[in-house]
Image (tube, rainbow, N blue to C red; front, side, top):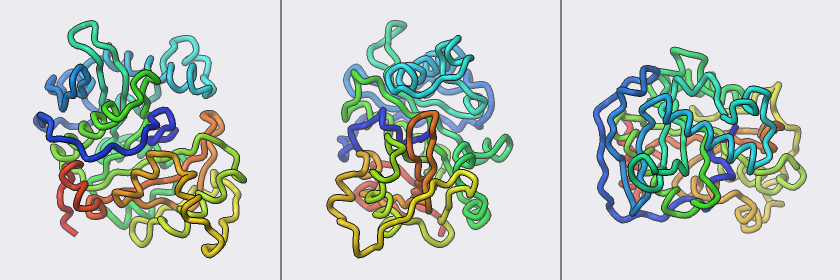
Length: 298
């Protein structure tokens, strides 16, 4: 399941104006979410972003994900998900959950979400979610001190897939990075198709022009890797390749993200996934204040 989901669409947000941003005190991962600070992280008009604080709020998030992924998006739901009409898994209890709401008080509607998994929680539990598709072992071993935040399960209601909702989600991620000192973002980005022939051009572009190198390199797991042969570098129409990228992948290229080697087909969600890694040191200067990313030690 990708963390850059086609259900977000709309691309990477433009540099925002300076909104009020409240950074709550640190909170250890993998414990009772009721201890999360209640403060909003940011607000634009009637839209606000904050962290989920109760099982009831998490169930609202899971119902939103079910609607977007399975009812609107056509992904295949398992029997339990169909019964409960919620998208839930064992990772939910280990993660923070960002939520964007529209309105105030009890009538506020949940319209967008992101799931955040800290390296500490991942290593205490089953590991990172993206390790089910990509071999993270060499990268994690090469960066033992990296403060990694994995993003996942992102979605926004169709009625709210505009710039403001996306900007608020990223303001929330920025707040969490600043508060907890994360210096690397990572996860799986998705193309909304499993047609590898149709994806050969953009996948070849990522392979030759935006592949993670050295200590940040990651490859698709051999048992999950999609079979495709990249075009030769000189045969790539760069302009056409960029045009074929989903909006959020384009945005991450602009801020300095790099991509793993290979791709994985997620048949249940009808997507082709690639790995994305974004160290704080790679974020371009004009975006550094926007992310609130700390300067890495090395």
